[in-house]
Length: 376
Image (cartoon, rainbow, N blue to C red; front, side, top):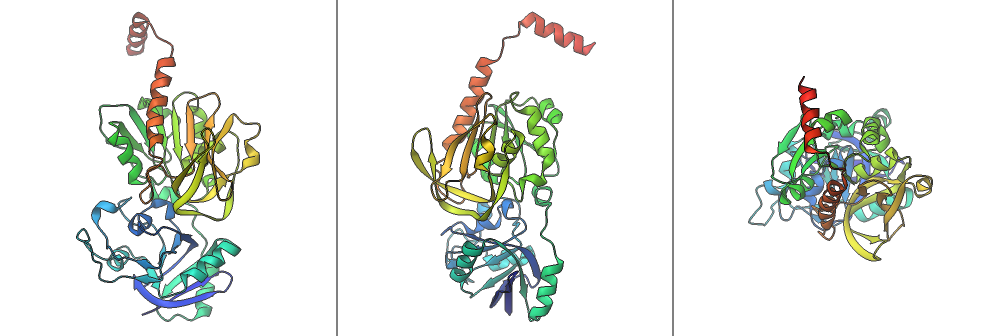
């Protein structure tokens, strides 16, 4: 079956359909990873996007249950040079084609993904429509113009109710803005008692869980579409140690008075170099974001830049000058990508311990009196 990818500037790509037989509208982006297509498909941060893989062969090692980063894929469409219909891998359970069919996601193969990527790099990310079948181009153009880009991606991908992953270490509240499983995995590997809460959880609700620290997850879309999270953070900064990742990094910056803006074509892939300013060391990182913290907006805030992108010099890390809180724009949990930055989770735990040591000691007698008063 034929498939078409039509961009908002009128560029048309015609190829072979795979996956679901349907149409979808989304933001057309590209990912530069060589492996990890299953993790890309199941990363909630891609919600609302049609993802182009720059590596030409996709699907050769199949799909396996253990490699999902969310319970289901969230991409709106999938664009590849070639997809493998018969994967060869002892772990493979089924193919990419079957996965896309199961979740109603259309795919297109056999097009010039290099040309598409170069166009997106030159002109910037574009809205597009991916359709299977033989619909005429004029009809696709009407559908593309009439269908807006979704703005409620965080609500679509966040957990709807609180759940926990018990441990005997520090209690961490993980605020789910579209969290990847890798974040929960890194925390539980360190023995943390993790409580995952929805994106719209209030500061008071988080306080009632008595956390030792708050982890802000990754997530899709524009951080300015999540104003309730900014309000929650403004109440908690300085009270509880905070570690933010990707969208969590951007929300933290907004809560501290900085600004965010849209990148021309975003950073997506497992090969992005980031420099840590304190050590001048370069880390190769996994990234997936279309927005960034505006550098000029940091002046006048209590924020300090800790990391920058070696390619375009955009901000990749922040810390608060007074309070126990730091964030990074990239993904230290990787999946897919290098594990160079997983040490940041250890830094988070160390920051929590340091915060506890610095807390004022409440006399035991006064603490008991306060409890009795509360019970009365």
